[in-house]
Amino acid sequence: MNTLLGLDIGSSSVIAGILVGKKVLAESPRVFFKSTHAGARVEVDADDLLRAVAEAIKGLKGQAKKVDAIALAVMCPAWVAMDKTGKALTPLVTHQDRRSVELASEIESRIGKKRHMAITGCRPFPGGISSTTWAWYRQNEPRRLKGADLVGHLNTFLHRHLTGARVTDPSNASFTGLFNTLKLDGWNHELCDNIGADPRLLPEIMDGDRIAGTVTREAAAAFGLLEGTPVMTGIVDGSAGMLLAGAEPGQLFNVCGSTDVLALCTDKPKPHEQLLTRALGIDGKFVMVGTLAAVASALYWARLQFFHEMSIEDFRKEMFRLAKKGPSAAGTVVFHPYMAGERTSILQRQGSFDGLTLASTRENMLSAMIEGLIAASAARIPLLAASGTKILESVAVSGGADHLDRLMRRDWKGDWKFRSVTDATMRGLGTLTPRD
Image 1 (cartoon, rainbow, N blue to C red):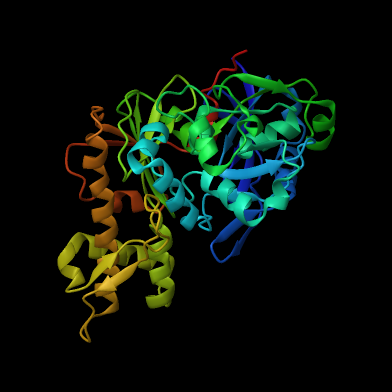
Image 2 (cartoon, rainbow, N blue to C red):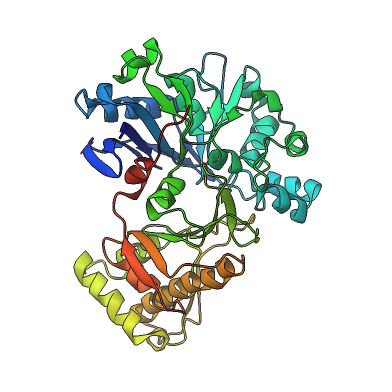
């Protein structure tokens, strides 16, 4: 069995791990990097991210030089344009960025909503695809793109620095909004023409478990690796979690934390405008996703605003007490759960309360938030069931260290069996077998 170096690169940090199968033999301390927030812009300095990757590998104290291959799991989209040397010409524009809303509407009006969904599996949601970001740079900062030799996502950027290869995988490609996602047969020239993107700047698409290149002498010195170590193309972090869950058609995988993600594995995708349809990255499978953009983050915002004198533990007890009482605890108050927008809307919605009166209490408001989030969580089940893929009763759950996942699925209809999967992204990489 292969020994792998897994690199798990999320929205704010990098973890490096040594894997044999699904077993993590060693793991580095988490290395954080900063995102810059300026209005609707959310960016990461590309050099800072590379430094974080190198530091995480260093945290393994030389063990990274003894592996058979390297596997990548990355946040997505994280769009970047590079010059001929691989140097970033732009920051990494992350999935939290919403600067391109107007351009998203223009893209959809030119292509048509139904046609865009039929090609890419979803509408052109800013933060859900990166074609809108590319269009924004062409319109607003074209000078940055003049020396562009390669445009892609984070795994493409990492390969350019680790191996020199120009590659991406189907899961990342489907987040570009330029890929024939439902057919898995390459870049779509009509979509490229629609935003004025040169397809020659796009990377080659290879399955996530394929060996896309080997570590160069320069990269070995810069990152503390062994020259010649094979590097797999890599996948989106959510795909790694689904692989650990089993990646069988009908499998549900739920990640509950600051954001709540519910994903269904399928081999017969049926796009819906309230879901995101993505390639898994290997084996010709797909993932259909329903996301609540702010769950724990919304509830703990409420603690800071209304219950700041409570300890976190007491606040959690209060949440579960109110959830047990049900909607009656909210009184007349209703909460619209969009504190961080909505992932399946071009024009971003905002969180709000209705039904407030002078008799409303902070408990009413917290209960309304809980009920709104629980209802939104349950509403995803019939959406996913409408895809036609029979949903398995066993649900893999990651996150939820504070048992928030149990609260969120209170109103799921049906008989379910829930199993916890820990360290899902890293251990999911351990399911990959490198292929030439």
